Image 1 (cartoon, rainbow, N blue to C red):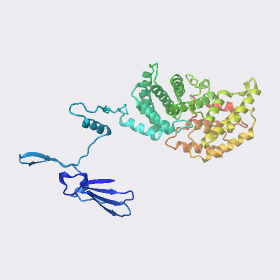
Image 2: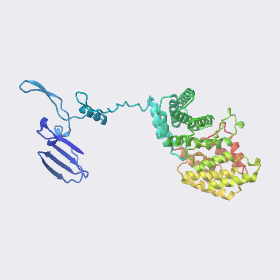
Image 3: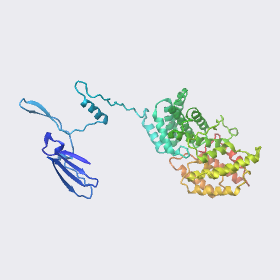
Image 4: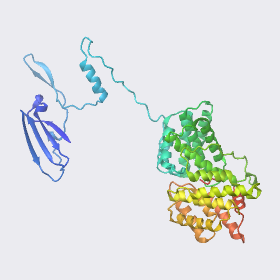
Length: 486
């Protein structure tokens, strides 16, 4: 740190040659260098560290200030001259200094050195939306808490949330407004549940999406905003503690349609890749739910759309998710109607081997691996016939689950819950659900809890084992609307 002050008595003629420079070294030692008349004197005070003191109010050395101009008479002509201090603070930038040099080097006749003047840039407002206090509060809550409840796999949900905030605030177009209102609606529902504020924000988002639907050729940013709005509305629906709507399937279907039309080849962009991986994971979980939910057995109105996509939207494929997707797409729910059982059995064994040999990097990936192996064995009936090995998978999965402080992903909790036969195992399931729901960032586990309680009741009432496929499908179909297992 360098502090410069004029020497006493220097007056208006003070120059750098007559300055006292106080220098504080990196070690905290104070060095005084007096410069003037070609003499230099140093005084080194060896101190253990930097010491601070407060000068008195009348000490002129406490700051460099500019004095108010004073007028006095001087010279034989008695003309008034303005006396001012030479100390000045100037608010400048590098462009201002560059422009100053251009003016300084210009000659009166205009034949000076020609140079291009630096452009004078007018900054753009980074946030075109005029947010009120309530919206700003919801935006802050989304960043700190609600974004952690976004159901994704292999990605940090907070990074995804930061990207969604940037996308939502980037423009005030209809697509941008839809993304922002959807984000605020999800944040409001996550914090306070379904209430008028969340409902009004959802309606505003839907109106903005309807206004933006007239665009034929979407830009990349508009397409991203459309997908973000759809997925946030999807998250709004699956956030709810009860199966009251199958709208989440339509929002997911719409997001896939926009991706197919405008974003299928944008996977090289890391931010867009986060969005695509988010959609891909929820596609797989939706296919699992819909393969076991039969709307005809409930009082449901309106068949949910098929969320199956021919081409994976995953920008960063995760091995266990791809294999789970293959199970949902290729393994029969009912194995009694298979035409060529030998070929199908060989296919199941290969699929089982592939799941066993994936690279496990963390406990969550291992839980998904074990859950997939258990589900594949159970849904295949007697074809794989590896009861002892499956029981080892179950014991290992419960051991992992019991050590976790929480488990935000609901699929492995549900699959393992279906295997809970003893009070100890059911206590582990209920305990991890309770600990997860106590986190501020958690989604509601109520649908999973209700379905598991119904399955446990049937297991306890039955003398032997129920058919696994029938047990899952009949219990899940009792829900008026398809539940989500994300």
